[in-house]
Image 1 (cartoon, rainbow, N blue to C red):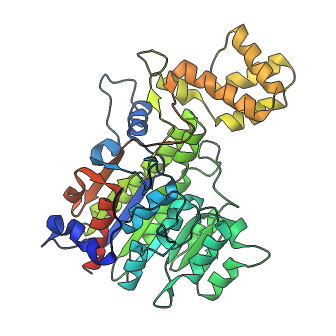
Image 2 (cartoon, rainbow, N blue to C red; image 1 turned 90 degrees about the horizontal axis):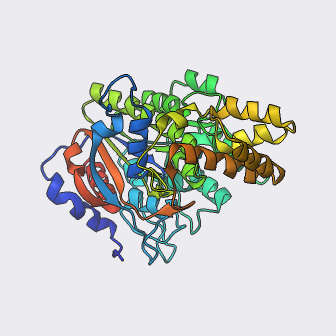
Image 3 (cartoon, rainbow, N blue to C red; image 1 turned 90 degrees about the vertical axis):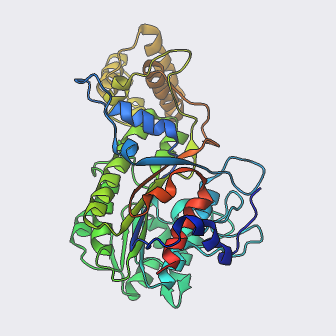
Length: 434
Protein backbone atom coordinates (compact mmCIF):
# COMPACT_ATOMS: atom_id res chain seq x y z
CA UNK A 1 0.00 0.00 0.00
CA UNK A 2 1.12 3.56 -0.63
CA UNK A 3 1.39 5.73 2.48
CA UNK A 4 -0.89 8.73 2.56
CA UNK A 5 0.76 12.04 1.78
CA UNK A 6 0.38 15.24 3.73
CA UNK A 7 -0.44 18.41 1.83
CA UNK A 8 2.93 19.78 2.89
CA UNK A 9 4.69 16.90 1.12
CA UNK A 10 2.82 17.28 -2.15
CA UNK A 11 5.33 19.75 -3.53
CA UNK A 12 8.22 17.39 -2.84
CA UNK A 13 6.83 14.69 -5.10
CA UNK A 14 7.43 16.77 -8.20
CA UNK A 15 10.07 19.26 -7.06
CA UNK A 16 12.98 17.45 -8.71
CA UNK A 17 11.32 17.51 -12.10
CA UNK A 18 9.72 20.96 -11.94
CA UNK A 19 12.36 23.06 -10.19
CA UNK A 20 13.11 26.33 -11.99
CA UNK A 21 10.39 25.70 -14.59
CA UNK A 22 7.72 28.37 -14.89
CA UNK A 23 4.31 26.96 -14.09
CA UNK A 24 1.74 26.92 -16.90
CA UNK A 25 -0.99 29.50 -16.47
CA UNK A 26 -3.81 27.12 -17.39
CA UNK A 27 -4.30 23.39 -16.87
CA UNK A 28 -6.68 21.25 -18.93
CA UNK A 29 -6.98 17.84 -17.25
CA UNK A 30 -8.85 15.26 -19.32
CA UNK A 31 -9.86 11.83 -18.02
CA UNK A 32 -11.15 9.03 -20.22
CA UNK A 33 -13.05 7.00 -17.65
CA UNK A 34 -12.25 3.31 -18.19
CA UNK A 35 -9.92 4.08 -21.11
CA UNK A 36 -7.19 1.45 -21.05
CA UNK A 37 -4.51 1.11 -23.75
CA UNK A 38 -6.59 -1.30 -25.84
CA UNK A 39 -9.24 1.39 -26.27
CA UNK A 40 -6.69 3.69 -27.89
CA UNK A 41 -5.54 0.91 -30.20
CA UNK A 42 -9.13 0.01 -31.08
CA UNK A 43 -9.91 3.63 -31.90
CA UNK A 44 -6.85 3.84 -34.16
CA UNK A 45 -8.02 0.89 -36.24
CA UNK A 46 -11.66 1.99 -36.04
CA UNK A 47 -10.74 5.35 -37.59
CA UNK A 48 -8.23 3.99 -40.11
CA UNK A 49 -8.61 5.09 -43.72
CA UNK A 50 -9.21 1.86 -45.70
CA UNK A 51 -7.89 3.48 -48.87
CA UNK A 52 -4.33 3.66 -47.55
CA UNK A 53 -1.91 0.87 -46.72
CA UNK A 54 -0.59 2.50 -43.57
CA UNK A 55 -2.68 2.75 -40.41
CA UNK A 56 -2.99 6.45 -39.59
CA UNK A 57 -2.27 7.68 -36.08
CA UNK A 58 -4.91 9.43 -34.01
CA UNK A 59 -4.75 12.39 -31.64
CA UNK A 60 -4.23 9.85 -28.83
CA UNK A 61 -1.13 8.45 -30.55
CA UNK A 62 0.25 11.94 -31.19
CA UNK A 63 0.08 12.92 -27.52
CA UNK A 64 0.87 9.61 -25.76
CA UNK A 65 3.93 10.03 -23.52
CA UNK A 66 3.66 7.44 -20.73
CA UNK A 67 1.66 5.06 -18.56
CA UNK A 68 0.34 5.14 -15.00
CA UNK A 69 -0.62 2.62 -12.33
CA UNK A 70 -4.02 2.99 -10.69
CA UNK A 71 -4.21 0.75 -7.59
CA UNK A 72 -6.23 1.98 -4.58
CA UNK A 73 -5.20 2.03 -0.89
CA UNK A 74 -6.42 -1.45 -0.05
CA UNK A 75 -5.59 -5.01 -1.06
CA UNK A 76 -7.84 -5.18 -4.13
CA UNK A 77 -5.30 -3.80 -6.67
CA UNK A 78 -8.31 -2.92 -8.85
CA UNK A 79 -9.57 0.62 -8.27
CA UNK A 80 -13.01 2.11 -8.68
CA UNK A 81 -13.60 5.58 -10.11
CA UNK A 82 -14.00 7.27 -6.72
CA UNK A 83 -10.65 6.13 -5.30
CA UNK A 84 -8.99 6.84 -8.65
CA UNK A 85 -10.49 10.34 -8.84
CA UNK A 86 -9.27 11.03 -5.31
CA UNK A 87 -5.75 9.98 -6.31
CA UNK A 88 -5.88 12.03 -9.51
CA UNK A 89 -7.19 15.12 -7.72
CA UNK A 90 -5.35 15.09 -4.40
CA UNK A 91 -2.27 12.76 -4.60
CA UNK A 92 -3.80 10.51 -1.94
CA UNK A 93 -4.62 6.84 -2.28
CA UNK A 94 -7.85 5.87 -0.56
CA UNK A 95 -10.42 3.07 -0.40
CA UNK A 96 -12.78 2.18 -3.22
CA UNK A 97 -15.92 4.30 -3.01
CA UNK A 98 -14.31 7.24 -1.20
CA UNK A 99 -14.86 10.76 -2.52
CA UNK A 100 -11.78 12.81 -1.54
CA UNK A 101 -11.67 11.42 2.01
CA UNK A 102 -9.19 9.10 3.70
CA UNK A 103 -9.90 5.89 5.62
CA UNK A 104 -10.95 7.94 8.64
CA UNK A 105 -13.35 9.95 6.43
CA UNK A 106 -11.27 13.09 6.84
CA UNK A 107 -11.39 15.44 3.86
CA UNK A 108 -8.44 15.49 1.48
CA UNK A 109 -7.69 18.81 -0.19
CA UNK A 110 -8.11 18.62 -3.97
CA UNK A 111 -6.36 20.54 -6.73
CA UNK A 112 -9.59 22.40 -7.49
CA UNK A 113 -9.71 23.67 -3.93
CA UNK A 114 -6.05 24.67 -4.09
CA UNK A 115 -6.63 26.44 -7.40
CA UNK A 116 -9.65 28.27 -6.00
CA UNK A 117 -7.58 29.44 -3.02
CA UNK A 118 -5.03 30.80 -5.52
CA UNK A 119 -7.71 32.84 -7.29
CA UNK A 120 -7.85 30.65 -10.40
CA UNK A 121 -11.06 29.83 -12.26
CA UNK A 122 -12.14 26.19 -12.00
CA UNK A 123 -14.52 23.88 -13.82
CA UNK A 124 -15.68 20.34 -14.56
CA UNK A 125 -17.18 19.03 -17.82
CA UNK A 126 -18.59 15.49 -17.96
CA UNK A 127 -21.10 13.32 -19.81
CA UNK A 128 -22.19 11.57 -16.60
CA UNK A 129 -24.11 13.40 -13.91
CA UNK A 130 -21.81 16.09 -12.54
CA UNK A 131 -22.02 14.53 -9.06
CA UNK A 132 -20.74 11.18 -10.36
CA UNK A 133 -17.55 9.68 -8.90
CA UNK A 134 -14.90 11.38 -11.03
CA UNK A 135 -16.09 15.01 -10.88
CA UNK A 136 -17.10 14.51 -7.25
CA UNK A 137 -13.52 13.53 -6.43
CA UNK A 138 -12.45 17.04 -7.46
CA UNK A 139 -15.25 19.10 -5.86
CA UNK A 140 -16.73 17.25 -2.88
CA UNK A 141 -15.94 15.08 0.14
CA UNK A 142 -18.03 12.06 1.10
CA UNK A 143 -17.45 8.57 2.54
CA UNK A 144 -19.47 7.01 -0.30
CA UNK A 145 -19.76 7.75 -4.00
CA UNK A 146 -23.36 6.49 -3.79
CA UNK A 147 -24.49 9.46 -1.68
CA UNK A 148 -25.49 11.39 -4.78
CA UNK A 149 -27.74 13.93 -3.06
CA UNK A 150 -25.18 14.71 -0.36
CA UNK A 151 -22.44 15.08 -2.98
CA UNK A 152 -24.64 17.45 -4.99
CA UNK A 153 -25.24 19.45 -1.80
CA UNK A 154 -21.48 19.63 -1.27
CA UNK A 155 -21.06 21.35 -4.63
CA UNK A 156 -22.60 24.48 -3.12
CA UNK A 157 -21.94 23.90 0.60
CA UNK A 158 -18.22 23.11 0.27
CA UNK A 159 -16.48 26.46 -0.07
CA UNK A 160 -12.96 27.83 -0.20
CA UNK A 161 -12.61 31.23 1.45
CA UNK A 162 -16.38 31.60 1.20
CA UNK A 163 -16.49 30.78 -2.54
CA UNK A 164 -18.04 27.81 -4.33
CA UNK A 165 -15.24 25.59 -5.62
CA UNK A 166 -16.30 25.31 -9.28
CA UNK A 167 -17.03 28.33 -11.47
CA UNK A 168 -18.24 26.10 -14.31
CA UNK A 169 -20.10 22.77 -14.18
CA UNK A 170 -21.45 21.14 -17.33
CA UNK A 171 -22.98 17.66 -17.56
CA UNK A 172 -26.04 15.77 -16.40
CA UNK A 173 -27.82 15.50 -13.07
CA UNK A 174 -31.03 17.55 -12.84
CA UNK A 175 -32.68 14.83 -10.74
CA UNK A 176 -30.07 15.39 -8.02
CA UNK A 177 -30.01 19.19 -8.20
CA UNK A 178 -33.77 19.79 -8.35
CA UNK A 179 -35.30 17.71 -5.53
CA UNK A 180 -38.30 17.95 -3.25
CA UNK A 181 -36.08 18.48 -0.22
CA UNK A 182 -33.72 21.00 -1.86
CA UNK A 183 -33.54 22.94 -5.11
CA UNK A 184 -29.82 23.42 -5.68
CA UNK A 185 -30.37 25.03 -9.07
CA UNK A 186 -32.21 27.91 -7.42
CA UNK A 187 -29.45 28.21 -4.83
CA UNK A 188 -26.82 28.40 -7.57
CA UNK A 189 -28.88 31.06 -9.34
CA UNK A 190 -29.05 33.07 -6.13
CA UNK A 191 -25.28 32.74 -5.88
CA UNK A 192 -24.98 34.43 -9.29
CA UNK A 193 -24.67 31.40 -11.57
CA UNK A 194 -26.17 31.35 -15.04
CA UNK A 195 -28.15 28.12 -15.39
CA UNK A 196 -29.25 26.24 -18.48
CA UNK A 197 -30.63 22.83 -19.35
CA UNK A 198 -30.78 23.62 -23.07
CA UNK A 199 -28.13 22.91 -25.70
CA UNK A 200 -29.29 25.97 -27.61
CA UNK A 201 -28.92 28.20 -24.55
CA UNK A 202 -25.47 26.74 -23.83
CA UNK A 203 -24.17 28.30 -27.02
CA UNK A 204 -25.38 31.73 -25.87
CA UNK A 205 -23.70 31.72 -22.43
CA UNK A 206 -21.05 34.43 -22.29
CA UNK A 207 -19.72 34.69 -18.74
CA UNK A 208 -18.97 32.76 -15.58
CA UNK A 209 -20.13 31.33 -13.24
CA UNK A 210 -22.20 28.71 -15.08
CA UNK A 211 -24.17 25.59 -14.22
CA UNK A 212 -25.45 23.51 -17.14
CA UNK A 213 -27.39 20.27 -16.60
CA UNK A 214 -28.58 18.56 -19.78
CA UNK A 215 -30.01 15.24 -18.55
CA UNK A 216 -31.72 13.86 -15.43
CA UNK A 217 -28.65 11.70 -14.75
CA UNK A 218 -25.97 10.77 -17.29
CA UNK A 219 -26.32 11.62 -20.97
CA UNK A 220 -27.73 9.25 -23.52
CA UNK A 221 -24.82 7.30 -25.02
CA UNK A 222 -23.03 9.16 -27.81
CA UNK A 223 -24.01 6.39 -30.24
CA UNK A 224 -27.71 6.92 -29.44
CA UNK A 225 -27.64 10.64 -28.67
CA UNK A 226 -29.37 12.94 -31.19
CA UNK A 227 -27.11 15.75 -29.92
CA UNK A 228 -23.84 15.24 -31.85
CA UNK A 229 -20.52 15.11 -29.98
CA UNK A 230 -21.83 16.50 -26.67
CA UNK A 231 -18.44 16.43 -24.91
CA UNK A 232 -16.80 18.31 -27.75
CA UNK A 233 -19.55 20.95 -27.63
CA UNK A 234 -19.21 21.43 -23.88
CA UNK A 235 -15.41 21.55 -24.10
CA UNK A 236 -15.58 24.33 -26.69
CA UNK A 237 -17.90 26.39 -24.48
CA UNK A 238 -15.93 25.70 -21.30
CA UNK A 239 -12.64 26.90 -22.78
CA UNK A 240 -14.36 29.93 -24.26
CA UNK A 241 -15.78 30.91 -20.86
CA UNK A 242 -12.65 30.10 -18.84
CA UNK A 243 -10.16 31.69 -21.22
CA UNK A 244 -10.37 35.27 -19.90
CA UNK A 245 -9.38 34.15 -16.36
CA UNK A 246 -6.71 36.64 -15.25
CA UNK A 247 -4.96 34.19 -12.93
CA UNK A 248 -5.53 31.18 -15.17
CA UNK A 249 -7.84 28.21 -14.85
CA UNK A 250 -7.98 24.51 -14.05
CA UNK A 251 -10.65 22.43 -15.78
CA UNK A 252 -11.30 18.69 -15.56
CA UNK A 253 -13.00 17.24 -18.66
CA UNK A 254 -14.18 13.63 -18.49
CA UNK A 255 -15.17 11.20 -21.22
CA UNK A 256 -17.42 9.57 -18.64
CA UNK A 257 -19.19 6.93 -20.65
CA UNK A 258 -16.24 5.13 -22.19
CA UNK A 259 -16.41 3.32 -18.86
CA UNK A 260 -20.15 2.66 -19.11
CA UNK A 261 -19.70 1.07 -22.54
CA UNK A 262 -16.88 -1.06 -21.12
CA UNK A 263 -19.10 -2.25 -18.28
CA UNK A 264 -21.71 -3.15 -20.89
CA UNK A 265 -19.08 -4.92 -23.06
CA UNK A 266 -20.36 -2.88 -26.01
CA UNK A 267 -17.57 -2.18 -28.50
CA UNK A 268 -19.63 0.03 -30.84
CA UNK A 269 -20.74 2.12 -27.88
CA UNK A 270 -17.13 2.41 -26.68
CA UNK A 271 -15.84 3.60 -30.06
CA UNK A 272 -18.53 6.29 -30.27
CA UNK A 273 -17.55 7.58 -26.82
CA UNK A 274 -13.87 7.44 -27.74
CA UNK A 275 -14.64 9.51 -30.84
CA UNK A 276 -16.41 12.21 -28.82
CA UNK A 277 -13.49 12.22 -26.37
CA UNK A 278 -10.99 12.44 -29.24
CA UNK A 279 -12.84 15.39 -30.75
CA UNK A 280 -12.86 17.12 -27.35
CA UNK A 281 -9.10 16.51 -27.08
CA UNK A 282 -8.62 18.14 -30.49
CA UNK A 283 -10.47 21.21 -29.20
CA UNK A 284 -8.19 21.33 -26.15
CA UNK A 285 -5.07 20.79 -28.27
CA UNK A 286 -6.08 23.65 -30.58
CA UNK A 287 -6.56 25.85 -27.52
CA UNK A 288 -3.01 25.05 -26.35
CA UNK A 289 -1.69 25.93 -29.81
CA UNK A 290 -3.07 29.46 -29.44
CA UNK A 291 -2.37 29.68 -25.68
CA UNK A 292 1.15 28.24 -25.23
CA UNK A 293 1.04 28.96 -21.49
CA UNK A 294 -1.48 26.11 -21.16
CA UNK A 295 -0.75 22.48 -20.22
CA UNK A 296 -2.97 19.65 -21.44
CA UNK A 297 -2.75 16.32 -19.57
CA UNK A 298 -4.89 13.32 -20.46
CA UNK A 299 -5.18 9.99 -18.68
CA UNK A 300 -7.68 7.39 -17.48
CA UNK A 301 -8.78 6.50 -13.98
CA UNK A 302 -8.63 2.76 -14.75
CA UNK A 303 -9.35 0.25 -17.51
CA UNK A 304 -12.82 -1.25 -17.87
CA UNK A 305 -13.86 -4.57 -19.36
CA UNK A 306 -10.50 -6.14 -20.18
CA UNK A 307 -10.95 -5.25 -23.86
CA UNK A 308 -9.00 -7.29 -26.43
CA UNK A 309 -8.74 -6.79 -30.18
CA UNK A 310 -8.91 -10.37 -31.37
CA UNK A 311 -10.70 -13.15 -29.50
CA UNK A 312 -11.22 -16.92 -29.38
CA UNK A 313 -7.87 -17.57 -31.01
CA UNK A 314 -8.63 -15.45 -34.08
CA UNK A 315 -5.71 -13.37 -35.35
CA UNK A 316 -8.07 -10.66 -36.54
CA UNK A 317 -10.06 -7.63 -35.45
CA UNK A 318 -12.68 -6.41 -37.91
CA UNK A 319 -13.34 -2.74 -37.41
CA UNK A 320 -15.70 -2.68 -40.43
CA UNK A 321 -18.16 -4.78 -38.44
CA UNK A 322 -18.08 -2.29 -35.58
CA UNK A 323 -18.45 0.71 -37.89
CA UNK A 324 -21.71 -0.62 -39.33
CA UNK A 325 -23.42 -0.79 -35.94
CA UNK A 326 -25.69 2.23 -35.63
CA UNK A 327 -26.68 2.06 -31.95
CA UNK A 328 -25.79 0.53 -28.59
CA UNK A 329 -26.78 -3.02 -27.80
CA UNK A 330 -29.41 -1.86 -25.33
CA UNK A 331 -30.98 0.48 -27.88
CA UNK A 332 -30.99 -2.18 -30.59
CA UNK A 333 -32.59 -4.68 -28.21
CA UNK A 334 -35.29 -2.16 -27.33
CA UNK A 335 -36.08 -1.58 -30.99
CA UNK A 336 -36.21 -5.30 -31.78
CA UNK A 337 -38.15 -6.39 -28.70
CA UNK A 338 -41.57 -5.34 -29.93
CA UNK A 339 -41.21 -6.93 -33.38
CA UNK A 340 -43.05 -10.27 -33.37
CA UNK A 341 -42.83 -11.12 -37.07
CA UNK A 342 -39.51 -12.91 -37.68
CA UNK A 343 -39.03 -11.42 -41.14
CA UNK A 344 -39.60 -7.86 -39.93
CA UNK A 345 -37.41 -8.62 -36.91
CA UNK A 346 -34.49 -9.72 -39.09
CA UNK A 347 -34.83 -6.80 -41.49
CA UNK A 348 -34.72 -4.42 -38.54
CA UNK A 349 -31.63 -6.24 -37.27
CA UNK A 350 -29.92 -5.79 -40.62
CA UNK A 351 -30.77 -2.10 -40.68
CA UNK A 352 -29.39 -1.54 -37.18
CA UNK A 353 -26.23 -3.65 -37.40
CA UNK A 354 -25.46 -4.46 -41.05
CA UNK A 355 -24.71 -8.03 -39.94
CA UNK A 356 -26.08 -10.99 -41.86
CA UNK A 357 -26.88 -13.98 -39.64
CA UNK A 358 -27.37 -17.65 -40.44
CA UNK A 359 -30.58 -19.48 -39.50
CA UNK A 360 -29.22 -20.73 -36.16
CA UNK A 361 -28.14 -17.24 -35.16
CA UNK A 362 -31.50 -15.79 -36.11
CA UNK A 363 -33.14 -18.44 -33.94
CA UNK A 364 -30.79 -17.54 -31.07
CA UNK A 365 -31.88 -13.90 -31.27
CA UNK A 366 -35.55 -14.88 -31.44
CA UNK A 367 -35.15 -16.97 -28.29
CA UNK A 368 -33.37 -14.12 -26.49
CA UNK A 369 -36.26 -11.84 -27.46
CA UNK A 370 -38.65 -13.99 -25.42
CA UNK A 371 -36.41 -13.55 -22.35
CA UNK A 372 -36.61 -9.75 -22.32
CA UNK A 373 -34.54 -6.73 -23.29
CA UNK A 374 -31.54 -7.51 -21.08
CA UNK A 375 -31.09 -11.00 -22.53
CA UNK A 376 -31.65 -9.71 -26.06
CA UNK A 377 -29.07 -6.93 -25.58
CA UNK A 378 -26.50 -9.51 -24.46
CA UNK A 379 -27.24 -11.64 -27.51
CA UNK A 380 -26.94 -8.61 -29.81
CA UNK A 381 -23.53 -7.67 -28.41
CA UNK A 382 -22.32 -11.26 -28.53
CA UNK A 383 -23.04 -11.42 -32.27
CA UNK A 384 -21.20 -8.13 -32.84
CA UNK A 385 -18.26 -9.36 -30.76
CA UNK A 386 -18.23 -12.68 -32.60
CA UNK A 387 -18.08 -11.14 -36.08
CA UNK A 388 -15.60 -8.42 -35.10
CA UNK A 389 -13.43 -10.75 -32.95
CA UNK A 390 -13.76 -8.44 -29.96
CA UNK A 391 -12.96 -9.92 -26.56
CA UNK A 392 -13.80 -8.94 -22.98
CA UNK A 393 -12.51 -10.47 -19.76
CA UNK A 394 -14.75 -8.62 -17.32
CA UNK A 395 -17.88 -6.53 -16.91
CA UNK A 396 -15.98 -4.50 -14.31
CA UNK A 397 -12.66 -2.72 -13.93
CA UNK A 398 -9.19 -4.23 -14.29
CA UNK A 399 -5.80 -3.32 -12.83
CA UNK A 400 -4.18 -2.65 -16.21
CA UNK A 401 -1.94 0.42 -16.36
CA UNK A 402 -3.48 3.34 -18.22
CA UNK A 403 -2.07 5.73 -20.82
CA UNK A 404 -0.79 9.21 -20.01
CA UNK A 405 -0.88 11.88 -22.72
CA UNK A 406 0.39 15.44 -22.55
CA UNK A 407 0.77 18.52 -24.73
CA UNK A 408 1.98 22.05 -24.28
CA UNK A 409 3.89 23.65 -21.45
CA UNK A 410 5.92 21.11 -19.41
CA UNK A 411 4.51 18.06 -21.20
CA UNK A 412 7.85 16.28 -20.72
CA UNK A 413 7.16 16.11 -16.98
CA UNK A 414 4.60 13.36 -17.65
CA UNK A 415 6.75 11.07 -19.81
CA UNK A 416 7.49 7.49 -18.79
CA UNK A 417 5.94 5.37 -16.05
CA UNK A 418 4.31 6.98 -13.03
CA UNK A 419 1.56 6.39 -10.51
CA UNK A 420 -1.74 8.24 -10.76
CA UNK A 421 -0.79 10.17 -7.60
CA UNK A 422 2.36 11.43 -9.37
CA UNK A 423 0.22 13.06 -12.06
CA UNK A 424 -1.74 14.91 -9.40
CA UNK A 425 1.43 15.88 -7.53
CA UNK A 426 2.98 17.49 -10.59
CA UNK A 427 -0.19 19.41 -11.44
CA UNK A 428 -0.65 20.57 -7.87
CA UNK A 429 2.97 21.72 -7.80
CA UNK A 430 2.26 23.91 -10.81
CA UNK A 431 -0.86 25.33 -9.15
CA UNK A 432 1.01 26.05 -5.93
CA UNK A 433 3.58 28.10 -7.83
CA UNK A 434 0.92 30.69 -8.65
